[in-house]
Length: 313
Image (cartoon, rainbow, N blue to C red; front, side, top):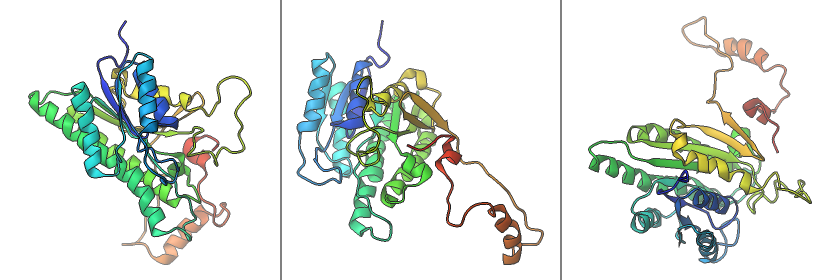
């Protein structure tokens, strides 16, 4: 019996550790040939010397399990190196079918203390990194479609957003903004590439990795059984979204963790007010909007539960 991703090739960024590694292993288990990308810097803030170790080790593990994999150690936030990454998949495996964007760093700081470099670095790796690889993968699929006389081709993009975008994260204005931008990039890409047969979706994973060690500091690993916050809970959804079975799933945002998947609706209008005049005056807005928010304590924002119907971890 054929595996779901047999004959397909994938690129997974940030795949040397944590979520990306679990996703790369899952895609390979489902039959895909994988380019394992990781810049290999040891610090979760993007500090330290780049290393071929993490990508090479993950690729070696895939091969040891009987799969096909090669390592790539380029920086996806660099336009040229992102193009080289896509080219590696095409050269090694004949074409690219699946792109999973996962690479990222953290440089947490309150907005009133954040430096320009802390802002730029996080936006660069997360948002520009997602764009760079998407740009070259999209061009590859468009060219393949044109070469086939306009026929639809196989293409899947799975991007990584975060609940920090959905519900806010006070000490991560750069990270939350980047993750929000990734959702916008995903929906735009989904619309642009649908006619070529390509889908683009985003996930908000909740998992215990070196990126989230502070977030889940109070949630210890269980003594027995699989950790509810293990990256292995997230990887199957990525495998599904990369598969032919998900052909009708496009432009979606899904929250995933611990055996749970939630599909997030696009924002809906909560309330609507129409001016009784040609345009609103201050007094009219005060009379309409102030009572609407009267029950909300000063300074309170919307809660995660309002967005997801879930409690935030």
